[in-house]
Image (tube, rainbow, N blue to C red; front, side, top):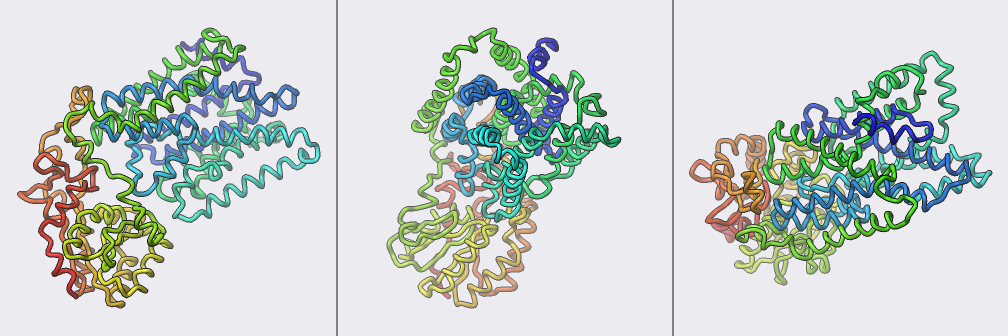
Length: 635
């Protein structure tokens, strides 16, 4: 295996095996983070390192071709197709086939949507557009990881033309470093100064990642004199070691979250630059990263990256919280699949053994194949994930259509900013429901209850971290006297998150509402389960062979004692609110689900919850069955 693996890169001019070793470091970080995140909480920054490597290698190749006068944009994109498409097509197709055999219709429909965007290298924009209420757990999106591939390809639509312009116009060429440094600075500046409201866009979109790719490109543009400097300095031989130490520090100490990439993201980028900048003849880069195990692992890093995430995601879809042993097994399996992909797919294609690389037929077939997968995804989405594959109608209970979040009637009449806008009738609006996605899932049941009392209800706002939007919506409530009742609902689990709403912000919100003579009703949040209740329903036959679905009642429900333990801080906050603001009223949407010592996600064969903590329409109705709404609306 070793000789075959190493035979291809060695043919490349000025091949540097330590760069492949750095790829190994990057993919190992990502793999461990996704399998056992507690070991390397910053392992996800391996993607940042991949961006630097890509910027360096692709720019070096482009500059070489431009200097030699043989740059051809068609040839450049042919190389990209040859490098990316075969393995990508194989992984997406395999994921879809197993999705047919394992997934519920809503899950397969979502996969179909992801396939469409993946086929156009548009996955990152899809993830930004889905962010917010419809953004299901990233672990349950088998093609989520293709966002980084999309970022690179979007960048390389522009970058070759920029280099051609710079190298052919002498005046501009003299200032190329200043131009690129300016772009890097602008990209880094907007990344660090983007509001938290746009944090998802900051993570996924190319303008916020360009500085990482361009850092590698900048090194490629100035590699010669940087190497000369390092060779003349006694500390030059330690530069790669310093880079590795910085990367390891990043893997151990950087933690992901709402704000990444923040300034600390400079560290993995800097570490990667140090390793690449070090001359091959000096120090650690030659001794460690250029060794055969690292090089061979780095050579298959791309198929490892492609395979590992669909495997992990499928395990989490089927089992909720798979054991670490299973995830480690899947990590090993992804390495085996990656080796097989390289050995039987990528290697024969790169060497020209299985295809005629001089013919355009191969490239057309790759393009058609990827677009065909997008067509399959579109067909899957339009047919709702083929519900005939599963027994019963549980899948329809899980669905929560977009018009139950943004209704045209509400948006047309009020044009509220934020994630939610719902209105229950054309009756005069007396009441407002404000909060996050839990306000949205309560809206269905609460609005029906209010309509029996001829009360109009509107739902607005979003998570409290969207501060400007929340403040504007609060001001709307305060300045409109026709709004008499304010219902407040936030997910109790946020009390342990960075955007915790249960504190000073909610205190001041309640104080303002009471000051303006609003009738404030806090909805005590419904339960949240460790296991996704949809795992308790009938799945396709292959999933049932893996014992996914049709779980026992004890595995699907949770004890009241355990649920109360998870909600302890939340309950303490509610008690403080009741003492501080005696006028505040409460609707208990928790107790109806928790009786006979257990909290249940299902009732009489119907799902009350469509995921770990969001209600179905049936569950939303159930929350308010025994609520005396007339009493609550009396000041």
